Image (cartoon, rainbow, N blue to C red; front, side, top):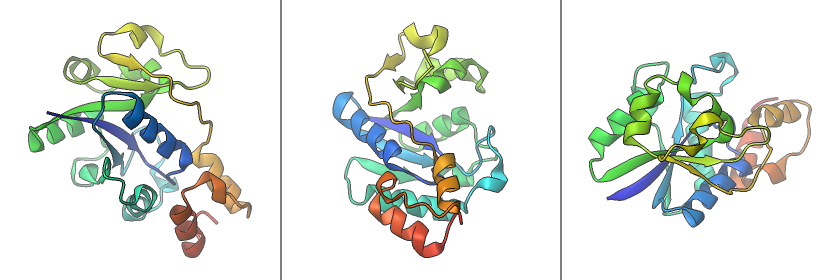
Length: 191
């Protein structure tokens, strides 16, 4: 059975921090693949600040290129909104019975994981691969047998800061995969 790590996000835009975490998970854990799941609407974020779903999906495709262990998924585009991880996991597990799906998340998300819809069912059926975040210790779930704390690099780059800097006319070309930076620059996104 193929072990897949699902890396959820709005990726508005995807940046090198996301790519570093995905690469680390492939090289330093037992995951066989990482799928970037582009979320059309995170229940915890304002939808008005998002680029179009397909523009963000395209940027993730540009970022990962032809890396054979990375995939991009638009599965949540056709699921009920707002998107809930438990629903997506159930759907993917049904559609891909040859894969075991696991979550990739930051330590800050692990701290608030008990607030997620059906978190108990997620923990019962899936593993969590947690990367460190400054100021987040993972809370009481850090020692759960389904939680894998990793030593992934701490990359403090935020899509919010990138959008603001682009709006201010700053050159952030080193914080974004080159093809993503070119696309954002060409389309005048976030200006």
